Length: 420
Ligand code: PEP
Ligand code: MG
Image: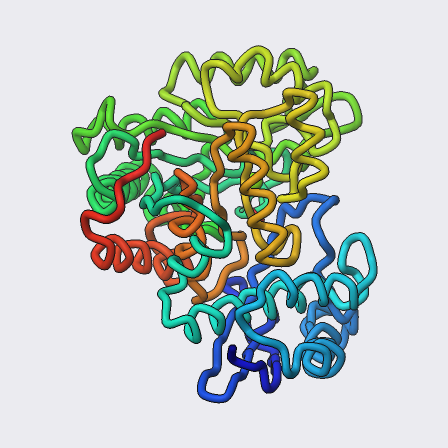
């Protein structure tokens, strides 16, 4: 048993230059540190990220209130607890907060403590973080994930209204994670070359997740270029495509609007079908808006047997919404974001429920990220088969890929490369 002596947070910056929390869980001989990520296209059912609202600091985005909550009430409550009792620690914070969406203490405060406690627990158990997560989650083995690499950004991550948010590649047909990452990165660079040739230096500007943001208004034009980059690098039939539409951002009560064109839910499904037919799309995330359950049911009915239908804003890593979605047959995969729900324990429960339903689980970053690579250990420890960590560029994204490369080397033959 190793007791928590103190929990201390400080205000630092995320990859967008917005304030966030660094949380330190201090024990007798260790300081375990976590950094809290932040979304832009956040689901309205996510646990609440507490911001100060004081316009005089960071335009109201400061997190001093959340930090104060960590340094006072949370620290007092956790002092003396065994850092290896992850569930107890998380349950205590949930109880202390007492709200449905962690709005009293702030999910950003709670999740930072939860992740740092998890790292402290691993340290004191003399385990690597992914091994410790495997143990506390009850997972049976390790595998390195198939990465979804976001190589062209749109929508909120690029400051564009009514737009598809993420155009991703999925290197599926490879023997190892490192080979898949290399191939995906080569496609990213080839896409950059094609864009530079076509649009000059304006073509290779990057969005929040490190993907290019060229001035191409139609989705076809974007996928066309990605397809060409895949072919030029020789990875045809080995690398496929995926979209995160983030459709809540372009839903207007009963219709959807993409780049000025309106779609009924049925027309939107037809639009996706056309894209799937023209390009090798094997996964669509948030193809419908977060509360448009009928749209989701229809989408999954028509496409769920052919491709992966991923729920992000729909599910918000919340077991109640996952249960609803399994009952309604609304999707067939979970996007897992720890800060959407606010504790490691609840995120593990969400993953385990998805696994129980034979869904795929895609462990995901946020558009606002940090140098913390916690989610790389999480995806391996949970043995979920996919990661979504953005482009293979920018240090807040590569921190996760580089950690996966390190884990792959450490595990050697003890871990396989996941299957789609
Ligand atoms: C997403 O929508 O999957 C995503 C990573 O974006 P954000 O963090 O802005 O919600
Ligand atoms: Mg999403």
